Length: 262
Image 1 (cartoon, helix red, strand yellow):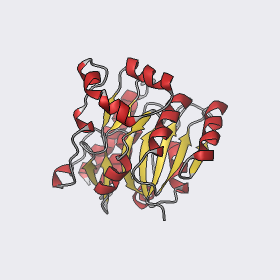
Image 2: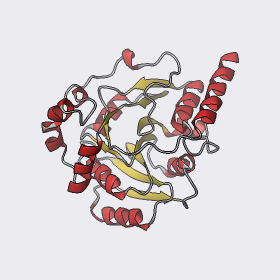
Image 3: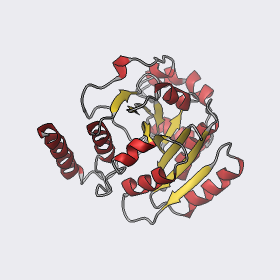
Image 4: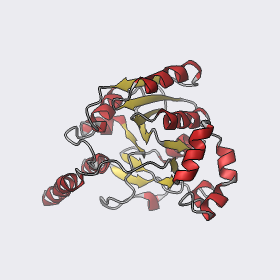
């Protein structure tokens, strides 16, 4: 069985997806598959994926449904069900990975646990530079990362140079919202299926990732921090529509409150 199924959420940004896939080509771990959870992208994304499949070093599956608003929860669940590995790592198609990203996630893998990682935010200027070049070179980026930090074009740099191992300090004692990012988290497939995956009633800006983590923890799964080990590089983009924020926050807070009454 494959060690990892990498599930990439994407929607109509093939240039960013290209850089994401470039970074997966250079992973130190080679025993994985890629599942692209496509929330209704146009044909340009499909054409890129078909082209990438020809020379990509590991299998790529493309899961797609029609564009009917943001339905990330639904397409992610379809990806979970077809995954061939028993361990899932979720990233977004606008994120670039360090070469040891998968290796670091595997080092934190543990039964009855999940991992939530963090990210390094790239500013608009460096994002445009990378998109224009169209190819990813981690060593080149790292060599100028300190200068990028000093000039404010990325928000942090030390996680590129300092890596910390596993330990009890990574365990969260209780559920908190901090550092829950769907662009960097991992769990066992059986644990995701046990809670029936993402809540498909959550669409648009809906805190679906926090809801997913909460329900895993509420089902007895330990949450571990992936900080200082698994950081992704997140390309700059405009904030998506957050009109559902108030309602989705209320729903999640209600779930948390009800769980404390049990």
